[in-house]
Image (cartoon, rainbow over all chains, first blue to last red; front, side, top):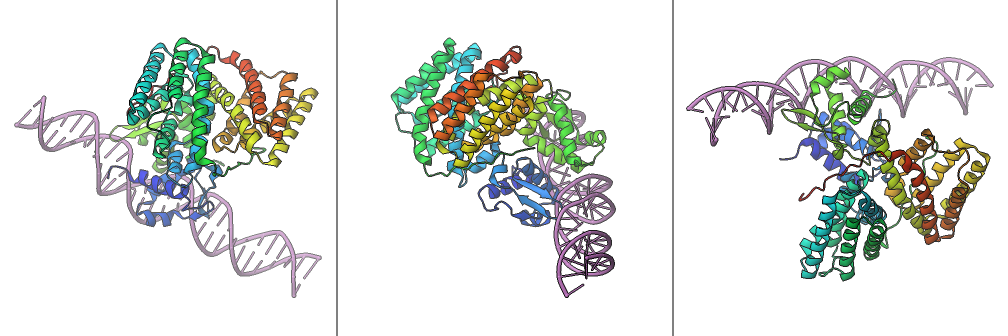
Length: 243
Length: 243
DNA sequence: GAGTTTTGATGTCTGCACACATCGGTGTCA
DNA sequence: TGACACCGATGTGTGCAGACATCAAAACTC
């Protein structure tokens, strides 16, 4: 057993809550969980505290541990995203991530063109050229790897820590896209060129051109992916007044 | 004492880590923290587990509890953001949030125009008109409140749970802006009209116009706020290869 | 220097006392 | 008789104290 009991307890409860096996409003007792997971109270308590900080449960004295509804989950937490991507909510999660990416990347491109350090600009250009080569050669695994590197570099180069933190999620969407068979053997020729254009615009410090190239890439990505989630219902989270 | 020991321990350690009193690499012992905060081991352990899930610390056997560097902190966590806003990192945090907002809101406006439920569109129009009235009347507190409501409605109306989750952070930036004395007594007339334009574009389902109106608003907001963070250094988070 | 032992920190388990929200019973008043 | 306010029993999370297990760094041996 490489993972700790603590980690396993979080994983067990987290996945069961997010895949709907433990629905919102469901109440559990710490003692009951002890027996169910065959671990001690301290492990349960520490796990519940973490799940509480993720917005998955709340603890109420005299009642127990209550599962919270989706709109209370922290949608930016890596673990929550990972759990949702391997559950029924997969489609909705992928759409949310794609929409976020398509909003953020053009802004990141602009910032990268203005602020990125010289070495990163060079890496970006190299990655774009390597992507084009891999695309022409039909080397899909390498193309995917370079694609992730390219977009990670772009987000990192923005100098915005929040943008940079989306690197992990972007990797998930890109690999998820190939899993869904959305990637053709030979990537779109124009898209390959747009990546080169973007890298060179960033390298040259042309913020406007960088934003536009990124917007083109994301526009195409969105139109290709949107086919998969046309039937995903949208959830509107109520505005929390007062406070 | 209304707050639990658990909560207070998290608050204490979280703020001290983020304001730099406990620098990255600093190692603490659970036993030592017990004495320092005058709480039992279970409280410390549960607090550390939560901080661990936020990326603030890591626990290493035989060593102790080590404080992690900034680039490991979860920049999207509400608590982390709140702690940073009341620390030296305030400027950087505000800039990150503003850049994120300015990237996301035009996209949210577009989605809201396409997907928002009818009642929300009406609320948005009402809020925009009320904002204009409050602005003309010079009622700054009410204007701020309506401003927050307006942008929250927009994000909520996008139907994207991640966008909607930024409501809280947006409220922080807007109130933070007034704290910094960045708001004139009488808001810019054109900006007031842009809010009305945006609301009516969303109401009419005109995605293109909604995006453009939002982009205008955010463009002005960014140019006004950017004066305050010209001297904030940018941090480039390295791309994590392999995995 | 490679392998082994020791050591010291977190990880896990358990029993107990306390705080306090909920529920049901009791008493009062109309 | 019925409605309502009060109050104590009950159960569950919260916090505490102490023990043993585990495992990796550090010290030691050869």
